[in-house]
Amino acid sequence: MPEPYLEVRDLHAWYGESKALHGLTFDIGRGEIVTLLGRNGAGKTTALRSIMGLVRKKAGSIRFDGREIFGRPPENVARRGIAYCPEERAIFASLSVEENLLLPPAIAPGGLSVEEVLELFPNLKERWHSPGTKLSGGEQQMLAIGRILRTGAKLLLLDEPTEGLAPVIVKQIAAVIRKLKDRGFTVLLVEQNFRFASLLADRHHMVENGRVVATYGSAELVARAGEIQTALGV
Image (cartoon, rainbow, N blue to C red; front, side, top):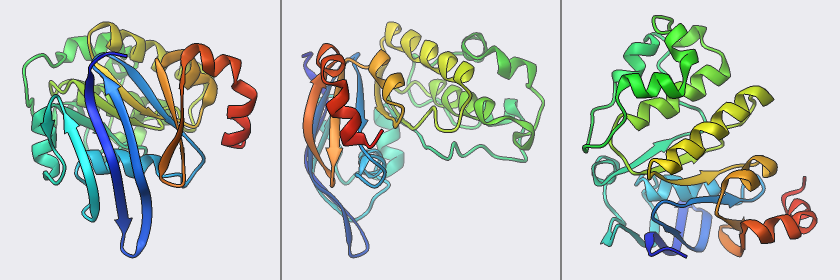
């Protein structure tokens, strides 16, 4: 395994009195694609939100690129080089594709140019002046991912990027994630689509009740597919 780029240790998180994470611990190496697998309610999205600083009530340790970021506000986490693409995509309905794409500022050098984003997602070029309300679910997902690629972030947190998308769009998203890895990006992926995750990721952390209960390499994932699908309720 590569040197840890992101280290999550004994992470606990609450929403009010309801506890969502119960000592979550895992690592990601620089340049890896790692998935958090698990059923709905297992704590996967809470893990991403906690890393990004969006969950206020939490305990534990989160280190990124050798520095502790636990307790930092979201804007500080973003400036350190982490970007979050939420499941709901957060596209501004009244803004055009161009305006949505250009909205976030660059926080570090090395972000993709507009031209590079459109090369990855040619559908967006065709919809350049269309408002967010006119985009399909797949186009919204492309825009949401393309938007964070401009920022210069090197660790991408992607929450359910294939949710509700047609198979042809899922293939496009997979191809883009592979290209991003080739370009040196590190990706933490929350995904219900077991097949999609199995074809992309280097390692897979199974999350149950707010903690990692097993970790699988790519080869092991194939060998134990039946057991994992049972755990996921597939």
